[in-house]
Length: 587
Ligand code: DHE
Image (cartoon, rainbow, N blue to C red; front, side, top):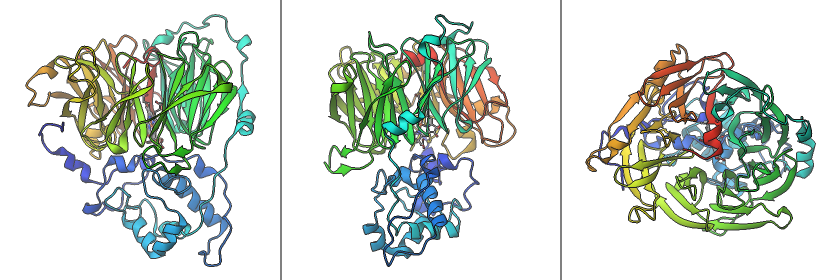
């Protein structure tokens, strides 16, 4: 089902998008040639910022290799990891972008490479030269670099992990009861992305209770089943385990599980609460199961292997989202480039049992349906949602959303007036929202199908959210090239969705960025997150690192501004994670 006709604002997306990694970079000197226009999705690719800092040697030279000094090679490697590896792979074997191995690059030659890097392509290759993102000298450097063999970044195995592992406060020395008066169920863990910290903000008083150093370009938070421990992962693979019972919550253990990483979870099945933690890495491609009390690394499993459909080997399939099953003692690990979902039975790590199911390539983010049985995960580059039954460990369906690059975060579960329980995703590549039926018992005809699709504020959406106690569905658009759109949020009234199916449901636009009252910069509004009661929605007003940001709190009933949290410590706030909602997968 494609979104119903409405003003074709998606043309707006025909302009060059800002790659997230470039947000702070100067605006592009020149728009990409129109026929090469790409949308936010093409630019919203992993930036291997940590790998970019690794020291590398020029691989064995061949007589006709272009001349390059060690310094040039190091600089080119940094640029490659930070700007190109997300699409072309760390080893240049290809990922969502084409392979750049020397059999191909030497065949094409310097002139072809130089021009391709300068102008980009209609298939989503940014115009690094004409956009001003890379200077002429850097374009020349990169064209020569691609004619040389790629460096192989170091692995990161048990010796490196154990060397990084710290137990700051032993379990036996930790408080036997909660030592503070914080309502930790209503605490928000807020990513301070470029500061490499999280802020713990009291959901009732809006007071910052602690700002804790974490990994580089920190990414997401997850909560242990008991609600006591907060787990945070940085893009550099550093995991911090934070004890929320301490007088002032603080890190009690940490470990670096890889060189590039994005996901973390803990064991939630009955009898296994707080027992184990798991983290997934982009590089090396692996997941690591750790002791839930100390982060001691117990089991490292590589995800290298064959792509599910082509059945050819992929050297670096990245671990994307990880969920913790409520039905079995299993972690559910999504592997991006092979398109496989792995159910990892954590009851016997020495004799690890896994079920590997074929899903779809380029798995990214997702969440449970309202029953918490089905896992809905975006295979975003193929425009599909894989529906995975965590009770039967099977793929239930692959659903085309009808939009470009679904990006749900964990998605949103709502009770539609006509279709009953549905799960919603918005899209990076266009402005549509897709609702997928999730009630095979009560609404069998709608189950695992797009039951409705309608337009929200604009493309470049990253997150969508509601709450069981709310009548509203919130959709952001932080990557939209239009400043006003990226600083606003669309809000749909759920009961009103039952109107004439031929007419898009109306939405209200909340000028969140304006409400924040920030004079400088071009802040983007990202990721709605509810408080524990589901009565307030918090939004990050994400500005450049050297400019003021804020968090705006909206009253979910009145949709009016309730509070603005500003503090010099709130540097580049992005993801926010309410302890109760994150612990119990309420969204
Ligand atoms: Fe994320 C979740 C990967 C860029 C904010 N992000 C995820 C998950 C993955 C991922 C695999 C799911 C984790 C899980 O559930 O276990 N993110 C990536 C990237 O590869 C990408 C595109 C580029 C990169 O280099 O990292 C990327 N992500 C970003 C951002 O730039 C965002 C907007 C700001 C930031 O803080 O980095 C961002 N990602 C988030 C957030 C979530 C997330 C807030 C968790 C959503 C949730 O509700 O659980």
